[in-house]
Each structure stands twice: as C-alpha cells, then as structure tokens.
Length: 335
Image (cartoon, rainbow, N blue to C red; front, side, top):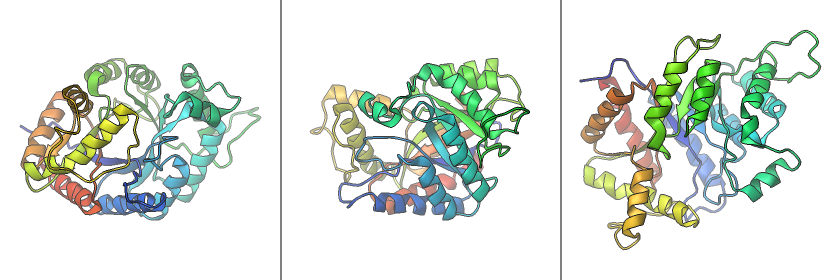
C-alpha cells in the first residue's frame, strides 16, 4: 500500500570531514558535488546545518556555504537546516539571506533552530554580549519575519538586502516547542528525527492539530529527517553504515567525529549499552537494499503522512554516497 501523496525528497548535509582530509576544502567540495548530483536526480532542496567547534563539521558559516552551493547548482532549492537563531542578531540573518535571495531568486530557504548548535563556551564566543537565550526564539523569529517582509510606515531599521524578499522561513525542532510555534505562525515544520526521533509522532500531531493557516501556508507541511545508507544488498549497506555507527559512537563519547572507514564488525568497538544508544539515535535510519528501504519508507509514510523527507547520508566513500541517493531516487515514484 502506498502513501496518499507523492513525497518530496531532499538532502541535509553537514559538510563532513574524513579522517584523511587535509583541512576543510575537500568536505566543502564534496558537499557541492552531492548537491549537483541530487539536483540531477530531481530532489527538491539541499540544506546545510550550522554547527560550531566540531572538527568534523565545516558548515559553520552556513550562509557563506549556501552561496557556494547555490552558485554551483541551477534549480535545486538551497538553504539552512538550520541557522541557530540564538547565535545571531535577526537583522544580520535577514541581510545574509536577503543577499542570497537577491542572487539566487526563488531558490533560498531559511530553516531556523532555537538550540545553539554547540557547547556553552563556544556559544558565549559567538554571541559575546548578546544573551542568546532560546526563550527569546519566538520574538526573534517575529523580528526576522518583519525584516524579510515589506517595509512598514515609520520603520526605522531595514534589512538591505532583505526587505520585501519574503525568504521562506521553516521552523526546525526535536521537541514540541517549535512544533507549537510553527503551528501558531502557520509555518512549515521540519522535525529532527534523523538524530532525535523519540518525540516525532507527538510533535507532528501537535503541529497538525494546532496549525493556523497563514499568508505563506494554508495547511500543515511536515518534513522529517531520515538517515540513509543504501546499497546493492542489505549486507553491503550494513557494512557501509559502520561509518555512521562509529561517528555516533564518537559523539556519545565526546571524541572527534571525523568520518572513518567502514569495518567488518562493530562488536569490539562498542559496549552493549553504547550499541543500544547508537541504534536508538538512528532508529529512523533507512539502511539496506532498494527493496528493504522501499518497504521501510512505505511504513514510515503510512505512519506519519509526511510531506517531505530530508535525508542525511554519512558514508565514507563519496561514490558510495552518490550511489545511495541514486538508489533512493529510483524508489520515489513508488511511494
């Protein structure tokens, strides 16, 4: 049984470094190559995420990277998944994304998160004298919307570029807070089920139940994050997925998260408790052959009725990553 509507496919990328990379450039170049590849496959959007003080992730200057990706592609929407708004003055983000929209009209998305995307020490370094409290998130979203909207009578500060650009805003979250806010504001909502799946159904249900139509959206629109490792066989996919397992294990242990080559067996690398934690973290993962992933996706879509799925894919070799998305693209028409 297929889902009731065609689901859009997109990609969330962290511009991840491998253990053999010299500096940040190779990761950034792979990110562009992936964006170009999934554009050729007809994917809807390609987002990058703001993280700081992580040696394995080089997407920290998110708006700069979006400009690089948009310049190297032609049609695919490019955006943030997301910008961590507490780290920034809304005016600065309005100017950055207003500039991107002016350069690449109709192709820029502004996904917003309310977490810092880093540790407290780094958050203080980013913000200096700004409080950057997550409690300010609703007010800061409203301020940002005003800067991106039409100029109002008596408005003393404008974002230039930015004013009247109407860059589409998405709210991102892994809890119920942003689901509630997105519903109240009539904004599209993306749930971070690729790393925090526990509250997914609660968040979706809350968002849909309380959704109020707005000038930008007349009905709820739900995007879900999904880890992906696709290959010719289930066994091959499970082998490639050990790179992802090692990465999440490093995150849990507070070690560096540089991508490492896949291994034949994981049992000597983690404790049973660590294995359980990693697998729980990745409980939404689509790992397997085309047939296996198609079956899993159908179950997910029947369960959630999601409008869009945004896939992350942390495998070691770039060719294997491209192949994962080739396999995934071949399934879209069946869902």
